[in-house]
Amino acid sequence: MANKIINEYIPESVTHPGETLNDILEERGMSQLELAVRTGRPKTKLNEIIKGKISITPETAIQLENVLGIPADFWNTRQKKYDENIAKKEAAVRMAEYTEWLKSMPVNEMIKLGWLKKFEDKALQTWELLKFFGINSPTEWKNIWGCKEIAFRQSFCFKKNPEATSVWLRKGELEAQSIKCSSFDKQKFGSVLRSILPMTNESPEKFESEVIKLCAAAGVAVAFVPPLKGVPVYGITRWLNPDKALLQLSLRGKYEDIFWFTFFHEAGHILLHGKKDIFIESSENKDEKETEADVFARDCPIPFENWQNFIQSGNYNTKKAVTDFAEKLGISPAIVVGRLQHEKFIEFSHLNDMKRKFDFVE
Image (cartoon, rainbow, N blue to C red; front, top):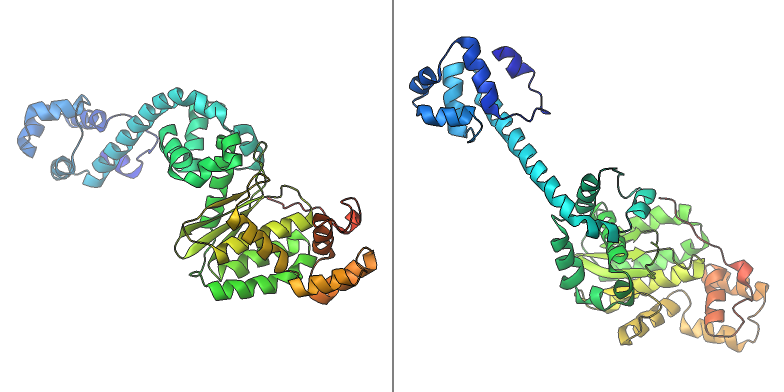
C-alpha cells in the first residue's frame, strides 16, 4: 500500500493526510503509541493529526519518512492539496456573498466574446470574473476601478456604466501584458507614426499585427478591444509603467476615418502629455489637452499647409480630387473625407461611399 501511495498520489483527493497515516498504521499493525515513540512526537499530537485537527508540518513529514519510509514530499504535498481545497471551499462560500456584484457585470457579453469561461454555478462564475480582474473580492474592484484612478471616476463613460467600462479597460490591460515592448522612445514613436500612415489604405487584417509590432518597438502597446454595450468609449491612453504606454482602441463608430482619427489622437496624448495622465475618449470629453490631441490627430496625416492649399484650390468636393490629394499624401481617402465633413466643407452624407467600415476579428 505504501508504494501505491507514493506512485499513485491522486491530486483530486481532499481528505486530510491524517486519514492516510491512520490507514498505513492499521496496515502495518503499528499503534499510535509506537509511532509516537519512534518519531519522538507526543502521542496527543499524532492523534490530532490522524483526526484531522492539526496539519502535518515539514518537520513531522521528515520524521514520518524516517519511520515509515514514505517520502516527506508525499506528506507535504498531501497537506498542501488539502489546505488548498479547504481554502477554495471557504472562498466558494464567500462567492455567494458577491451575487449582486456578479449581476452588475456584463458577464454574458464577456462569455460571448470569449473573455470568460461559462459556468452554470454562480460561485464558479464569480470566481472566474475575479480572476479576469486579477482581484480577490469586489472590494478590490471598487478600490482599483472605483476609487484609485480619478480619471476613471470623472470620465463620462465610467460614470454612465462603471462595471462595463472597467471590463473594457481591464481587457486592454490583459492584451498589453501579452505584448512585449521595448522601452519607450519618443523620437522613435514619432517615426513609427509616419511609417503607419500608408497603412491607413489597408484593411484591418493587413495592418493590425504590423501596427502592434511597430508601436511595441517604440514602447507602446496597442490593444484593439471590441466595444461593449453601454460603454461610449473610442479609446484610452495611459502608462502601465514609465517605459510602457497603452494605446487601447475600440471600433465604436466603425468608419475608418473615425478609427484612424482616434488612433492618432491617442498617439498625440502619448507624445504631448505626461506619463501620469489618463485619457478616456468619449463624445463628452473636451479640455485643453483633448484639443491638443485633436490638432495632432488632424495634422499628423494631413499637414496644415497641405490642407490649406487643398481647400483654397476650391477643388475638394469630388471623388477624383479627394483621391488625388490622398494619394499625394499616401493616406486613405477616407481620412480626407472625414476631415472635410468634420470641418463642414461638405455634408456628412457626401462621399460616404469612400469610407469603409472596420471589423476586427477576435
